[in-house]
Length: 114
Image (cartoon, rainbow, N blue to C red):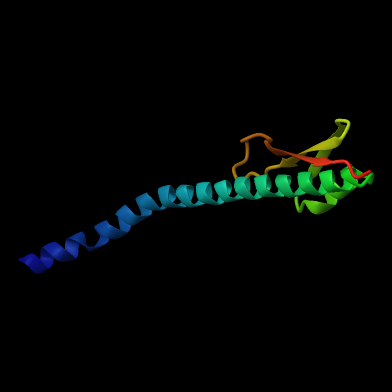
């Protein structure tokens, strides 16, 4: 009797797994999206430091900033008298369509080299 019962329940595990698979996939994609956000924030910091370094040496901050980032980056620089401040904005890649456009921003300040 128990043999017949086990045989009938054999497909139930496969059906439960198929029901759980979309949830598992969504959690995995959310983890990848968090990784992309962290990567964009790291790239924004790198771009801001490179732009501030170039601006402190009286070079083009925008070009150095854009070249330092692997992602699409824009920079704003401001001369504060004895130092320079550069803020970079990096667009965060999104996996889920319809989430909108978000940016990671970082600021770096370095003394001017006279």
